[in-house]
Amino acid sequence: MKDVESTFSLEGKVALVTGAAGLLGKEFCESLGIAGAKVVAIDSDPVRLKNLKVKTEVILEKVNLDITKAGDVKEKISQLVEKYKRIDILVNSAAVDPKFDPEHVGEASGAFETLRFDEWEKALSVNLSGAFLMCQQVAPHMAEHGGGSIVNLGSIYGIRGPDQQIYEHLNSKKPAHYTVTKAGIHGLTIYLSAYYKGKEVRVNTLSPGGVDNNHSQEFREAYGKKTMMGRMGKRDEMSGALLFLCSKASSYVTGSNLVVDGGWSAW
Image 1: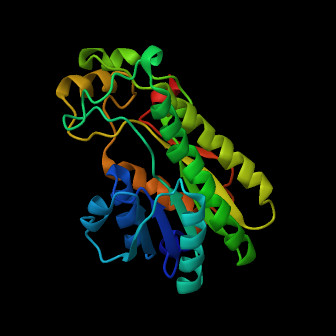
Image 2 (image 1 turned 90 degrees about the vertical axis):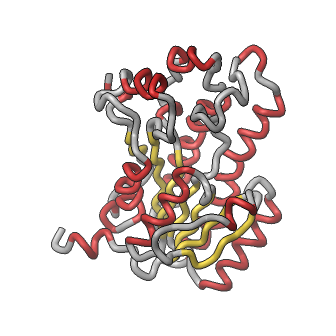
């Protein structure tokens, strides 16, 4: 590696980020922009999308899109390709992810025995089918125009079962659909990386561990005991891995699952 700066540079690249108004989505938009990319921020929540602000002027466009609707996804991607002539990066960050921070705690029990089928279906639709639909429209464009990088957001809970003891003091549990969909995400990753062999379309999974979002001290301590770092992750600690996967620095990396979990999965 002769030039570190140019190796990690995304100058001139167009990047699509779904779930852009979410906890990590905001960080991803900003980090990609700092590296030189122009970002199309995609989210299904028009209010959060309108209020989305990042520290750098990196947003090309804000797109209110329900990624579970195949027709809408096809139409919007076609419009973006026509408008910007290229899509170099796709980050599938949108997800139904039950939160346990003070703002959301108690919203759902998460118990397997009482998990409603409509909740299960919604999570599969957003977390897995939404990523599938985005990849289905973006990957062929990349294959026809010299390649690109797709990063699908997985989770530590996609490769390890949730330790429900962490959530006991909240009288709640991490629901089954989250683990199932995040495990499925990496299945999509390895399928697509093999499918586009020789087309310079690299597809990888980024699997974060738990990220602190003003959680209670009790929750932080319970979660931290599961990691070798002894704490939850910080929002910006996923960005380095994302930039690696999106840039030339990872030019020989595809079909991989990059786990950023403070050592949780190494026990």
